[in-house]
Amino acid sequence: MADTNPLCKSVDGIISSLPDSVLCHILSFLPTSTSVRTCILSHRWRHLWKDLQFFNFSFIPDLRRRGGESAGKQHSRFLDLANAVLVQRNPLQIRNLSLVYETPYLDLNKDAVTGWVEAAIGPHLEELRLRVWSGKIGFRFVVPPGVFSCRALVNLNLDGVTLELTPEASSSIHLPSLKTLHLFLDSPDHVDSILSGCPLLETMHLTIQRFQHCAPNISALKIHVPFLKRLEFIDSGDSGIVRFELDAPSLEYLFIRLWYPVYCQFSVTNTRNVVEARVDCLIDDGYFGDKYLGLVPKLLHSLCQTRSLVLVWSTVKALLRAPIVVNLPEFRNLSNLEINLKSSNNTSLLLSMLDRCGKLHVLTIYKDTFAADAPTWIEPASVPKCLESHLLVVKFSRYHGNRGDLELIAYILQNGLVLTSMTIETIFKVDPDQHRRVTEQFCHMPKGSNTCHLNVN
Image (tube, rainbow, N blue to C red; front, side):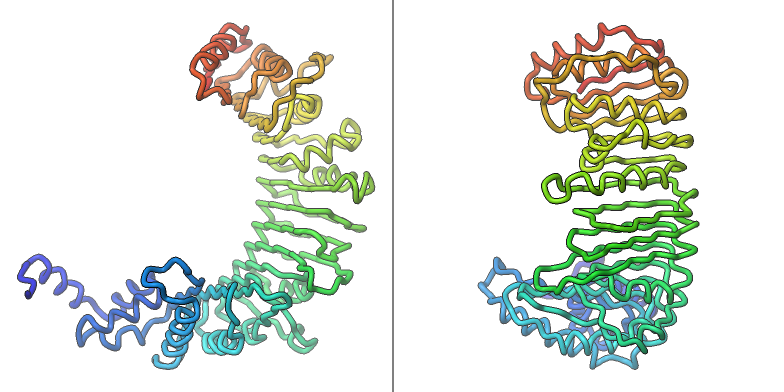
């Protein structure tokens, strides 16, 4: 039965009256498979998708798909679609290609992927996202070297791929417009060559994760980028990196995760402009002992100018084993500190940090475990200056009710002379009676600030 709804006809007429450029812009927000299906709508739409400049292909087998379509059938349809779209279109003017291709159960067609990427390489390519992964041991997909000479490329995201560049290709890398770079690699090789060809790079996310099938090697990683503002660096272990150098005078945000580091040489310089830093350094007790404990205080010294600092439990653990009183720097500009103490046994580190954060405004404390054997509270000889003059907001997460946590909170409430807010998140939300008793206990504690609002939840 024909649709006689005048509203539907009106909407269809409005859409069809839009210029091709506007319609293509709308289609660019859809998966490419959906954009191609619009060819059945009318004669006007039949060839419109061929003018697209933004392509989004994604294949991850769905074994729960209704109708029982096999993974192999899904794979064949995906290959047919990608090949057809990249062949049956107007002369190549691709501006954006996003390709997610994962085959945990099937043979990944590397030749097809290479062809698709090479079809996108051209003077108009501004953004390329490439995630290629296979569940087979020993799988390696090599990025076509032409990617690294796209002059218009602004965003480049390579995930799960391999960089194998000849000396000639390494020396000819030229990405003069690149602003954002995401690399998820199994080796730091060629990273410095890529960075040397990206003079305007502002944001980089770099993950190094060496897999078991990769032969170990000894590598150096140098990140010398003058305009870099945001850096996320993750070493997932066994990377083979023994020398790490970071020199980024424009850096404003740093997230660094080092798992089982074996850095013989570690240098972080020119970080005076860092506003926010998150430090996650895991040093394995049994394997490395105390050999690399100095790495964490050294890193904190290089970040002493930051205004916001997050210390996760792995970093705190390394600091607890290091001579912290001697090695902790003065954080003269720090206004926001988040620290995971895990248990009440680690309160001394918090007080040592507060002693070195004279201008701290916001403090967030995370506790993961209950410490029934918490040591007797020893009140510090002097009150940290930030408690008396600057600390405004305190949040205590996962309060378990043990004595050590109770005395720490009481100490902060009593000595926080300018506190405006103390929030305590307890583990007793499912026990109303216990939650009420805890709330009453905190409400009767003496407060050094008449303006402090206490919130227990």
